[in-house]
Image (cartoon, rainbow, N blue to C red; front, side, top):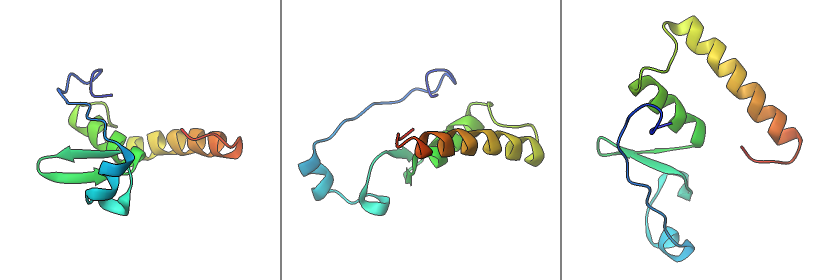
Length: 84
């Protein structure tokens, strides 16, 4: 999403050992560091990037419709035993 939105980023990958040494929200990845704040959870990260890149809804109702579709897709993959 960051590439599509034209947002520069560094894709930093860490080992499991380094994950255990660092402090992350909820103790897991992915984590986006944005403006000095650590943002966790894939969908929260996606929603932040969408808003910042101008890819979010034009109003709260449109945002909610987007959330409905995203949540449906997540539910679908979860029901198949697959992570999104």
